[in-house]
Length: 192
Ligand code: GRF
Image 1 (cartoon, rainbow, N blue to C red):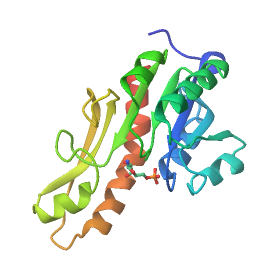
Image 2: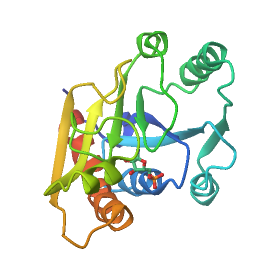
Image 3: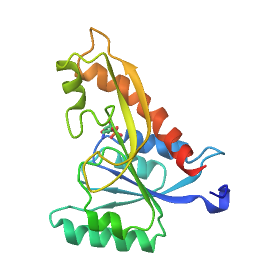
């Protein structure tokens, strides 16, 4: 791929549903010199997502879509992404599953960050499952998005040790810290 300069950075949307620490981290990553992306938009499925505050703070356009009729919602999102010339989607704590039609209809890459060492623990409560299974290792994965939940090709993973005293909360905290390093690294891997 041709090297991206300040003029031709990939216009990126981040999809969130919650706290948005990965969103904030990607905003910061998009400010550094070697970054291949610019964050142009954030989409949330709920106005309650705490992470939306970063859109205000960093002056990023935000849109809230309630996914009651997924098909219509996705159609509207695709129109918006085309209008905004978005060609890269980063899912970051986004709690809805995008359909095959949406994925096919989007002209660009879609990636996600997941708090487990995929293919282990797809879906929710990954840290809880790692703890009750007494796993020695946990971690996070950045992967391409397909219509099958948390099943697309892995781009990068980071593995960490689970301490005997860890519980789901402490493990989540440790993994999240790694997510903030892994997401930018994975983006650099696929775009540079
Ligand atoms: C992260 O652990 C992410 O991997 C998972 O949900 C969490 C979202 O955290 N899918 P945040 O909203 O980015 O702070």
